[in-house]
Image (tube, rainbow, N blue to C red; front, side):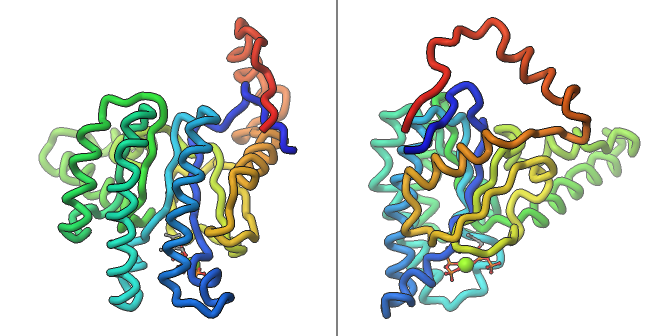
Length: 262
Ligand code: IPE
Ligand code: IPE
Ligand code: MG
């Protein structure tokens, strides 16, 4: 049993869902079968995140670089994405989940847009949890886009060069509209970021799990969160300083639910 402290949940969790292809190949199956299984894992983890009370969950589903994969695999991934959105529509709406998408959404095929756009719209007032799908997403691309938008404002005289700051840049990053990621999990055994949320990662806690994404369970998510809760986040300060805001935030909170066993 893993114990998760309900007072110290990461507010924004990001997941690099990796290992679908290897899951399938290890079983002598086509890679697409791994993606199909991976889609079931997405359902599980979205449900678990919502039950736990996460404010934001960002799932890296398809990178800008993943377009370079064989056409058949890309087509299968897009079809699975559409199926996922269709089958999860009611669950998303019934559970107060706001569906959000980041990345080069214009590059997605019409068959995906036709279900993605209405669901984003229908769920935009939901406040329980924001589920962001990173689709055709790249962290470098997002930074370049933000820089371009600020450059336009400066060129047109609406902004001064000195006003280009870490904060004004952040304002142009859709991935950070739900705040910086507190915890980023990567499944599948690789210890790399692969162009995910680069700007927001500055002080994220990283958790690498060897389990392949289709095998990732609720317990694996809880274990990642429990590991996050063991860490001291210092944000460049010394320990006594960095714990002050946490202590202040907890003051006045009723201690009725301090620990939940999951
Ligand atoms: C992650 O699994 C899914 C996507 C990147 C779309 P992979 O397809 O990268 O699986 P591996 O890493 O090849 O096992
Ligand atoms: C990262 O996985 C992208 C997603 C999980 C969507 P990749 O499989 O594309 O990353 P690399 O190629 O191992 O770095
Ligand atoms: Mg991979």
